[in-house]
Length: 127
Image 1 (tube, rainbow, N blue to C red):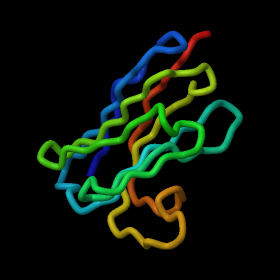
Image 2 (image 1 turned 60 degrees about the vertical axis):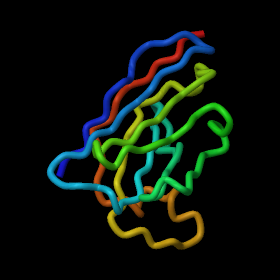
Image 3 (image 1 turned 180 degrees about the vertical axis):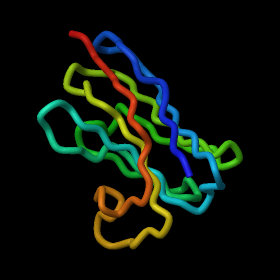
């Protein structure tokens, strides 16, 4: 099982990037998928999550209204469209997979909920 994140890079403030996370080794169609980020010297922060059906999506407060998470189960891929990027969005972005969601309060935002993690992709937003 591998999660491969891609799409990071350098962008100016106000710009957009689209991250992708591809799962290999098996299908992830029943998994909760999430994106987290970690900036230098800071703790890992929840960004967004999407249920297996794609019906429910969740976002961290700093990215609400700017980021959009989606998934294509046929391609075993989850996406994070990031718009109106700000310098404070600069971080390494990680995708993660939760095989058996607990559905406890705010479960989707807890790193310990997730079973597998990708290697991360760096997003740098210049001012």
